[in-house]
Image (cartoon, rainbow, N blue to C red; front, side, top):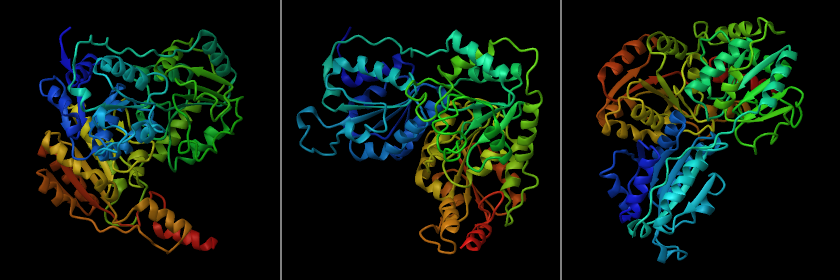
Length: 556
């Protein structure tokens, strides 16, 4: 052992645990850590606002299954980062936020930018801790990596008093983290097999986090062996290939009515990894609460989630990838009672996801945009988005076919798409990355386009501009028809903004213009924005704002 500063010890622990990227906004409260990063073999992505940095770390956690790392300064830096902590909490994503803290001898005096981090983050983080002695850094960082990844994954917040980081101590490094994974028991898998063979209308729902590429392959094999229809939950579409004949679609916002009918009529629902929360459950209407025990098999890595909302007939405490491996090893039956159901479900999905019949008001047809993307983009393209009606086009019409190709917040946070795209391109430089953002969504974290420029990360951002907070306007027309309030937006020229940042900008007003604009953006080799101006009436693939308003007025 040799004497090291607290800052150096911390960075050494990140290296021990395999950290490749740190996303940060620098601050004087953790200068000793920044100094240690200077010589470390860790890529430091300097961001423009802590919320963007936290979203990048959350996206990194989604892609890798390992804790994404974000570093921010105390006080406003920490509160700016809080949306990323909330997303990691609701999306069950492993993340560790290191945040500066006032010196130990100034605590409890409301010193400059002082915060009680346990009070601030206690309800949205799995664990909040402050390191008061430098020799405990290896112990606490190791514990943080395990807490973030074991059971139901989630965020950890670690406060770092600035004087602790300059203390010099001798301490051994921790061992690399190795999370203890829950696995299904032999008896549980045997009971699942019996339930399956007794079923007549089974359906599998894949969701949650804690998956891997191999886990998805194992799920596919299980589905093939039992000829099961498999649907994915809200914004978890990368968990089953959309072009597979067993894929039944996604349970998101405004899903395929035929898929909803299939789940409601199923006599066995196998929920793997997810919680079936408000959005995929259609406001908790798909399954009885707390009943449905006779037909629900719930697989989840967190014991606190099993039987929390839904009373399961069979609860299996296991990570999704461990369960999928065990399910893939089940003996293939000679025959099943539901022959042909998977093929029928896939046919329903293909019909629902075909953009060709969809027409909306205006010269620029988003269905045509999606059809072009499907025709020209590689299957492993990573698509990112935040929240808003514009995301419907992506979720319904892009066929996600591979693991780690989707980054989207199940928590419904705006401003997520651009930072997530930056992280995706940094971690997966060989893949093309496209972020979808509404005009309101983009301007919540659009400044991270500058981060893409600075770090030479050629992302493409498709800004879908209808001049308003479209989702809220849609709800207004449904609840208060004709009374528009606080939803109109006056936007900049986003293509010109891209050029001002030093990137490539395109403006698209008609469907035929999108293909050439996309080709130029891809060829530019730099971050690009494609500014798509759509008719405000084109609020969903099926209904215009006028349709929604008239329907509401007719009920009045």
